[in-house]
Amino acid sequence: MSKRDYYEVLGVTRTCTEIELKTAFRKAAMQHHPDRNPGDKECEIRFKECNEAYEVLKDSDKRAAYDRFGHAAFEQGGMGGGMGAGFGADFGSTFSDIFEDLFGMGGGRRGGRSSGRERGSDLRYNMEITLDDAFTGKTAQVRIPTSVTCETCSGTGAKAGTKPRTCPHCNGQGAVRHAQGFFTLERTCTACQGRGQVIENPCPNCSGAGRVTRERTLSVNIPAGVEDGTRIRLASEGEAGTRGGPAGDLYIFLSVAAHPFFQRDGADLHCRVPISMVTAALGGSIEVPAIDGSDATVKVAAGSQSGVRLRLSGRGMPVLRSKRNGDLYVQIVVETPQNLTKRQRELLAEFDQLSSDTTQPESTGFLSKVKEFLDGLGQRAADK
Image (cartoon, rainbow, N blue to C red; front, side, top):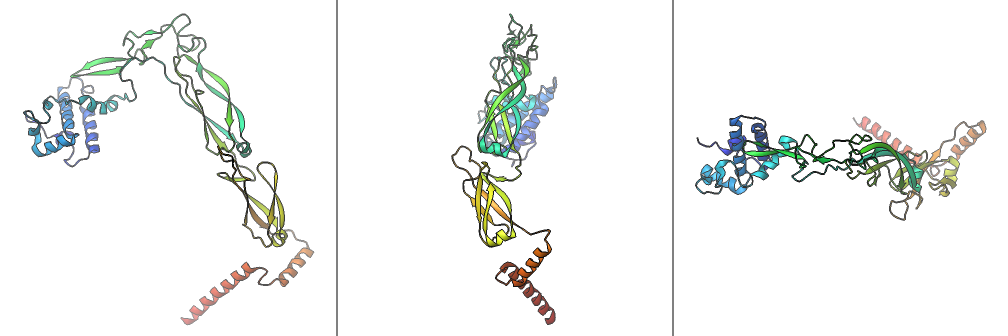
């Protein structure tokens, strides 16, 4: 029987990329795999055919030779001698590419005896702190419900006076092998779940798990300068491992609550301070509270407008793992007087009459530009 074209076997074109080739091979191999089609000789033949085609086409030199000479390139002592059986020298590596896809054994054992000791899971704890705590730093106490090593059996899972014994089904290997057609499959032992050991007399306190659930109180050191979203790792404070395995880690995720006065931008702090119209016009000084609890004096220049920012160097948040602080920015907001008395209204009206273009240059300039704009519109309308 003549061989089919390798590209046809895998269902790809001659211009396919390496990625397209590999994807097609995995799909075809999964479809025709003998373990998925027990007793189907046709599928076994197709699987061999797919492997043979991929062995050639995945190699750039062999592929070039095949494109030029076809199957003749590998017959009678050609480049791929021995390919007719469907197994190249690196069949194992080729098949391993799809092994995880076929059986879902990714990350599984690759031979060797399993000890049954597994690392515990990492844990996450969300903690909210105030901006003041982030400024000063603190030591916080957290209560964590987690799995800890069983004291009764010291984590072995076996009843006192007994110990786990080697699994009789896999002889302690954690996996069993089955001959399937022309190759051997290795699967996780269902009797011991891949641990290689079985517990005939489980510990009554932990039911053989080697760990129990307890609530623990831990101290967490929060350094000064932490920001929202900071993650603190406590090594080996997570869930206990099974059968005496190492514990996982505990991760503290911090969130900083909003402050009623300050807004944070990295290490800098911002605040808005209202001042009277008189202070803005004549100038003066205002007291601004700083994050460290002290008061800072800020000088306001005469004629200051709303939105002006004043900078206080070094009065912001600490920069994590350094000896410097950010800055404090004070934004002035000029407050318009409200609930005026009759006399106050009279004084403001008198002030307005005495005002000149130099007293309120921005509003005067704006009104002049508006007048010029309207006059231009009128002129253009007249020209039409």
